[in-house]
Length: 146
Image (cartoon, helix red, strand yellow):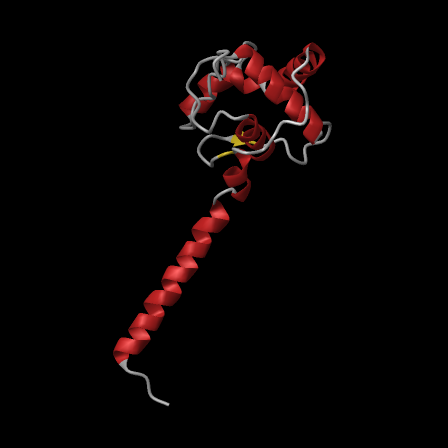
């Protein structure tokens, strides 16, 4: 069976295109697409916000700062090694989405390779429910318009 050079070239281009498309899909977080519509199963009660603060202090404040404003020694260190500065969670500018679900997915899965924020998923000592408490706390320290 013989193949024309044109046919083989077309087949090669289609194969490479399909392969590269698959690579980018693997690198992105498929959960982020559904995050916008995720509903927070934990009511934002005073107790939940207090739990969220306690967990934030343990898992997040080292980078985001005690006040959540992105000011910390770790933020300075990350900037010096070329990593993106931790987000200011108290302002109205959100780089990775502002719904409860988007915040949860960022906390659970982490944020991009250059941001150096590893997710808490699989980390000992924290459950999904506790991550939702952190979402409630983060909402409580930012602008009320979110």
